Image (cartoon, rainbow, N blue to C red; front, side, top):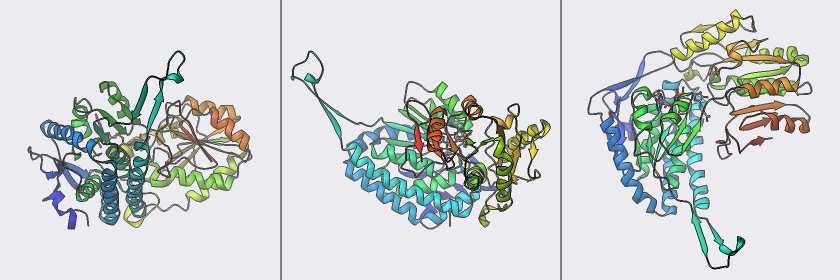
Length: 470
Ligand code: NAP
């Protein structure tokens, strides 16, 4: 159970502690932040509201610990990461329990998130040993006008203190995808977990603590992003920010100083469906891609762009599958569970009502109880509707009917987002040409957008990289 057994030391009364200087601590102010269970809409957990002084302390120790950590042999860093991965997987049940309670992740998916995270930590350790163990050797006479009189050796060195800020929807997986690469490369980490998801993240951090990482190499400060976020991202002790989330990332990039920023932001992942596509395969991918975890995935299918000639058949097939989705609490492992917060549910409802007012076809009746929204496919959506462009991050999927491939590509490229997209056709030549024209980081062919397997490149939502997955 969460907060018991080996995790008993991370909680005091009913408030989870934060992690700094290798110890679990209480905020000196005595202030805490409530975490609301999306299903019950009642307070499920509390975490410490860290002050600026407490952030300063974590930064200070992260800076000094990093210097020693960078000198720790690579094999030793890898060994500790492997140990943390094993501990994380061993304790998957209590961590998954937190994911169910604080972000309403279906029970089975919650376990998968933890196991997959452990595997990613191990994989990163393995890869790190290989990548960081290599360097480059240059000789001067390979450049015109030079004799062989100079040699150059290059190797990868750490950045320093990495500030990691993951979003609520994968608070464990997207935290370790920042933590593990940073640590294997000799950096230290200050993690600011999302408020919804903070307790899952604290349990995960404890697995690193149990593995025996030196004090200060990892810290985890909790509190609302709106309260401590700016102080953290503008902190002079930070050498790099790795952020995943929504538009908050744009604001951070404007405020941060001259340090490397790794930004993974939102998506309005387009699904272009041509006349010759296998419509059963498309329908299965649209439902899985659009409605898994109630559409709260950056790589969820967020707009279907279907050729008019096959749209009726496709919508019928998708509707038949939507009718089979189970709706209810995450504990029952339902397909559709409550969205993360009341404000999210209100935002989604706003998009639905806008589409209704502007004449979209509702394939199902709109239904909402608290934060639980029943899956909804909106057909005949037009570009003047907000849902055609905005990211609902909920179980609501718009279908725009198109009359040409160019129209689909145009819609995809006119979006503010450019994370992933997909194209369904039996003609591989066409698929590659369309993928090339879609201005997104990754294009999946005959498969829904998704992150993973976790070792596939993902952080490529901007030129000069583009990833084509077949
Ligand atoms: P969010 O509202 O942008 O929050 C992300 C993180 O930023 C949270 O930890 C949040 O903390 C923190 N934060 C809030 N204000 C801050 C500030 N002023 N300074 C620093 N940090 C601050 O996003 P979300 O609702 O958690 O996640 C959903 C979004 O993430 C969607 O847009 C989704 O597409 C995107 N996402 C992208 C990827 C990707 O890889 N591209 C993956 C998953 C999700 P609090 O929780 O305390 O506010």
